[in-house]
Structures are given as structure tokens and as C-alpha cells.
Length: 163
Image 1: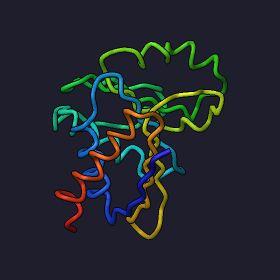
Image 2 (image 1 turned 45 degrees about the vertical axis):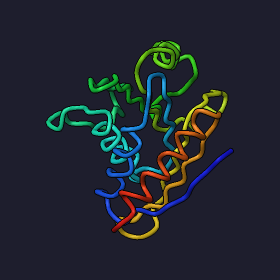
Image 3 (image 1 turned 90 degrees about the vertical axis):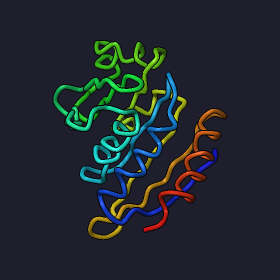
Image 4 (image 1 turned 90 degrees about the horizontal axis):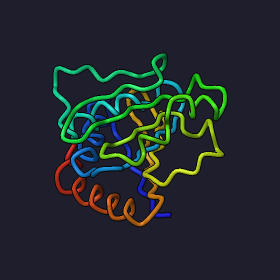
């Protein structure tokens, strides 16, 4: 599994990384977010939404209570939060599988709560390191995601890494 680890030093930089990824995503992309409460999963998703051209005035918030927030952009964005779900049956009730085969991008917070889910995608692990800094590890699960990760790393090195 191809992986890349980097550090961002502010919420803005975490959003910028998400935005860089959002620009590269195509239809049926899956991004699986992992990290403790407050690690930056929603912040990263806010940037990703902007990279998908979700309107700047559209608030991108955690779907902790609604379980899924849809957003319209260059591609539809389906932002799931599995934190409050108890069983896989809850996912079935949501129609969870239907979102992975469409034209949109699916982002799943707390995907690790259901290890029995086998989802190919880009795994993004966010960890606090100090104050506003985050260590972010991106892991590509599947060849298309390996190519995506290579493109992101190249773009970030050229454009985004000049802090």
C-alpha cells in the first residue's frame, strides 16, 4: 500500500491539503478519514469540498447528527460521519452502498468504527502533534488511488509545500 506522511502547521494548511486533493478527485472516489475527535477530519473535508468547487458560501459541517451531508460542486460530495452508528445495519438503512457507485465523491469520517467494511479508497489519518499542527498520513488502497496519491504529492510539493 502506497503511503505518504506530512505535517500541516495550521487548520488553513490542513484545508489547503484537502483542497489540493479535491481538485484531483474524479467520479466514484472514496476518501476514508481516521482520527480522534478534533483531529481535523471536518477541516480537511472543508478544503476537499472547495477543491470540488462547492460554493464558498456553503458551510461544510460535520454530519455527526444527520449522518450524511450532501454538497453540490464540480462533482456531488457525500460527507458521512459514522461516529454515532451502532451496527452495520444502520449503514444499510442509510443506503450507504448506493453512494459509492455514483458520479460523486464519498467522504467517510470514522470508517474504522466498522472494520468489516471493505472499502477501496484513499485513507487519510489525522493526528494532533502540537497546538494546531497535524501529522497526516495518506494511504492508497488500490491502483487508481496510488496514482491519485502520486499526483497529490507532486502537486503539493510544487505548489503547497512552501510554508
